[in-house]
Image 1 (cartoon, rainbow, N blue to C red):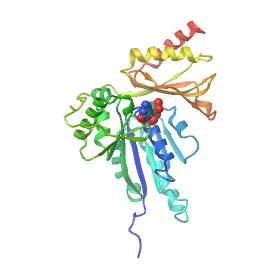
Image 2 (cartoon, helix red, strand yellow):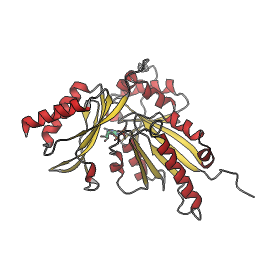
Image 3 (cartoon, rainbow, N blue to C red):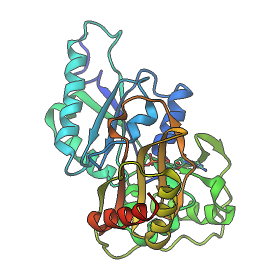
Length: 317
Ligand SMILES: Nc1nc2c(ncn2[C@@H]2O[C@H](COP(=O)(O)OP(=O)(O)OP(=O)(O)O)[C@@H](O)[C@H]2O)c(=O)[nH]1
């Protein structure tokens, strides 16, 4: 008996969610716990300067797609990488060593439904690849601000098979209950769980909780810009400048990422809205990208930001 055409297809899991929702943190935890064994990771970042791959290190087969979202500007590169994976599988002699699952971590600006549509429209991938699940992470701390300001967060939630609430450790249970009520209303068919840094936590009871208000207007598009840090910039003064910048513009600057060299080592810098996370120390590898940060947000004028930083640093250097 011959196998049904396309029965042994490459499975694809899409891990999506808004900027800074906790996608890399969650995925890293799942991989560590043994989910998605032998997966090939595809990490997509909207900015040219990629940071998320540093979080995974060299432990997993990984394709990095930076400089455009897989749902729009980066779609061609994304589909090409999947075709390549399917080709490599067809050439493998037997099931051993064949990649059976690919996991795409989308950029925080991507709409997973548009990615799914592009897969269906590609005849080669429609035959060789099966989209097995769309998992969307939703940040309990920032969801209210995101959903009221940007229709993208809603589109991501509506596209999910499974919704994972992250950062409930940073939000009061009453806020998380409102978020649960919102998710149930937007996507009644999706399963909903809550996790803190990848560890399951109980969902609060959402009975009677008011769903959160949603954006009903299109806003200016969110785009990444890169800022080169001046040579010799002192980490402590940079942190002061960054906090001041985010305090003043945290509604428009949604995400900050970068790797910075400091006397304490190589640090992964992360900010979400006006909140800068405690930096994580990274191994000393691939340092070519150090000293540049990515700001992702609305109508950010890179020259103005650079001038502000240079002026601030000049006063202190
Ligand atoms: N307290 C807390 N912090 C978390 C949790 N999940 C993620 N974080 C932090 O949130 C920040 C952003 O997490 P990432 O995993 O980089 O988020 P992301 O969705 O991959 O970000 P982008 O790719 O830029 O959209 C990091 O500083 C994480 O340590 C959580 O459940 N609780």
